[in-house]
Figure 1 (cartoon, helix red, strand yellow):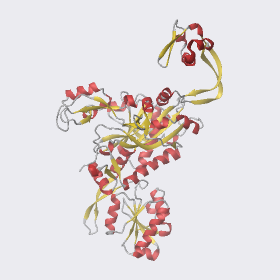
Figure 2 (figure 1 turned 180 degrees about the vertical axis):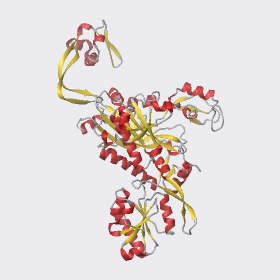
Figure 3 (figure 1 turned 120 degrees about the vertical axis):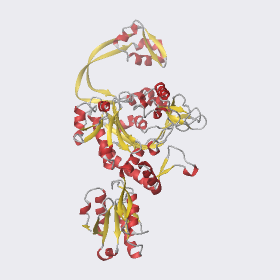
Figure 4 (figure 1 turned 90 degrees about the vertical axis):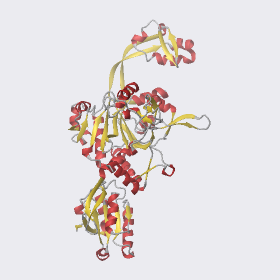
Length: 580
């Protein structure tokens, strides 16, 4: 078995991940999180909240997973959120066309359907399932469509990302933050994409969890007040220039900013924060890099975008986090669709004198001429520049209809005004985390096998998940040496005390102590507490470290505090008690 198969086998057997709907044969693109998987996933999410909500101050909101059609028309998802679909003309199996040629072209997802068809033809690529001829690539929209309400209802979609729920709440959020930039908000929740052919386990799902932050910033002020926190951190950056040579570069955040590799400090700070989070939860730093999107793959709304890519044995470098400067695209798009201003009034420190172009329609004459449309016509006239207003024939479009206005009804001039502030449409910096991919990467990076001595002094293979103690689903195993009442009673009391301290502990009295250690090593439990007959004499227990298998003896009276400090890396294991 390769690494992926070993990890998934362990995940299924020990209650981390299960195929959804197994009772009915299952379907691709869906996974259930078992008891240990759900706990591990929540720990990842809560550390993310610790960083983004508590430390950064980006309060969390929760919005519906179903959105009305207008939201996704404005965002561009209805018109352009699709992947190229290619079907076998013989067996009917469907594939993502760009995936069929990914081994030939590195940036296959940036090609047009016609270019994909040409490469499939030139390289004689056939159906991987039956070897049949492949049809031409066509666009397939990835959103799940639904109806809201009975009968014909209202068109709706399962959201393909959590971001739009935050953008449409911009006005409320701006008031919550007292209209002072920068501010941010976060959301962790389910998103849905009707993937064409999800054949990569938890790497490509149709229902998945995202953790996203939308950080609204002043487009003229992109320095970050806390950049010093990370500016000396060294990251592996695979910039656009580095991709030409195929050699990622290691450099500090400050070097990347000063050399214009990362667009600005706000974006650089978020890249560094993602690096901090991923390494904190246990992603191996030597298997982590940040790749900049090439110009021909950059999203239309972004001026710069970086992906945190994690190396996985079967899949290679996999995108797990996207960090983008989305500019003002989203707010402008929703403002246009909703006809509501989505902006912030920015007050200057000192008033400024500015020259301003002013259009003055003659409303006394426009009123009788255009009646109910007069105000809308006037509003459109005020958007025109001097060149447009100097034409012999002036026209504007209102609700799809053209209106011609006599030039003598309009005057315009440039005036000097004293202003105290200006209306600003914020830009958005967005870190977007794929929690499911991070979950799998964490398990793979933690997975180890090694030879150790068994109870009968012979060598055996030990499987151990070397999860960080902060994210391990079960943090302590409480093990009476034997299942006798005099040992099990104090053991169960320890479990209760640990629970009161917020530590999730498991109680296990089945089998030899060695076998119980192995069972807990396999699920990543960092510490095991053994209660033996010496406990009854001196009120002490043994704590065993999962990774080193070393043991210390410590007092029951302070046990819960000792374990809490170990779990959160406040003390070294050697200082937790008397070494054995």
